[in-house]
Image (tube, rainbow, N blue to C red; front, side):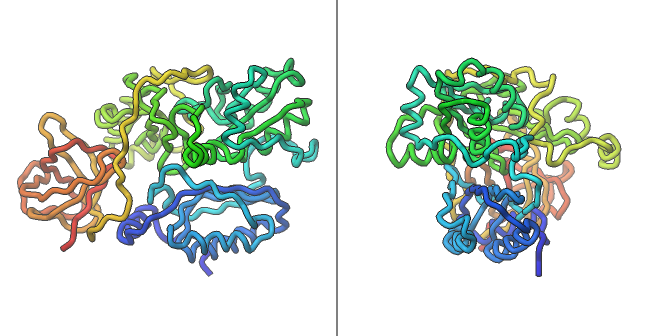
Length: 452
């Protein structure tokens, strides 16, 4: 019985692209008493692995918290796996605003002490005595009430790219940090104000609302289903969005657009931008906002120091990062003295720019293709792109597809390729190949060989 992943993220990505099937990104949570989280975890893995469901899931004695990617054709079968448990019957699934077939590339289910790290002792208060759930229309209405205080229970890097107008946006890196800060800040408004809270999908507010009711707040409300469900209801009911900007998400997309307003800046040059990047240096992985120009110039790095490091021999890179904690702490690293245009705490509500409509890049492509490799650099003046060949051989005359979130899908036929400064007829796996590209490419782009 398979209980763990056997494919790498890269292998899974190739399989997904080759399959050409649409996938849905979704999230859900449920608080419930789970007697044996380990068995629960293993049973879920077996069921979901059979459906090619991927994602990041936490289970604990107190319930389940999941963010997932599921093939559209398996969606109902996936729902049936949830319905097998009484506490998940009729469970609301928050389907993403924007989908990406590569939002998750592994199925990771972990048993944790809690499904959200809140730092609270649940035995000291009634965790079921939660605030009043508000749908989008009701949420909009209460925001217009002058007696309302609205609080964003997300972290600084989440609220920087998008938040509700008028919200308190705590300058924190973790959910647990925000609870005592807000409690202290609002001590004098426990009875005379509406305490209205929101988060990404609603799970943080479930615990936060119970905590604040225990602290003596009389009028506590929360956005049902969080920002994800709010955006869905906006479209369905034609409501005005009081949220401005982008909703940060914890998967490979790193965000989904709610409005076309860009309210944040590239942390390196200050241009209007709300696209997050993880620093390319494996010893850093700083999470920061980076525009396409800086991404190309800095090769996905947050600083010149990291840029120098990624060009070092691998053995030297490993030596430099020995003993440093990275990995699952990536999303907690949103600040650095190198980021001159980083904002947190009190944030603006005025749009700096309007986002361009993204190309619909991962809907089923009607051509058969295989992944060749990825983009490494783009030489603007020469209009030449550099790519690393990771799979299959590349030859003059091949028809290729370059695809990425901003680039979209672009096809061209190769009439000339260069490897190591020498013009050649073919490039093999491991080669860095350059050729003319009559459009701008990004480091997030992949290159495919189109098959006859």
